[in-house]
Length: 46
Image (cartoon, rainbow, N blue to C red):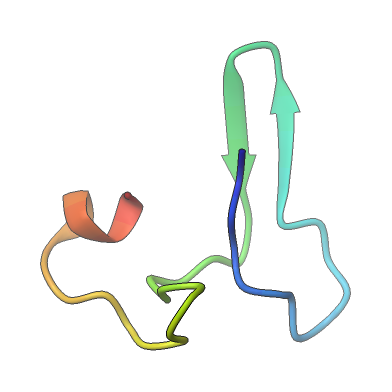
């Protein structure tokens, strides 16, 4: 399940097609803390 922080402006955060998920407007924020996730793209994507 996609777990992103709530959108600040109205837009579609993600859409799923089969086994693919397309994301829009996401930055590397931890949804629990609201802080930017440190590390590289791997850590931020998780």
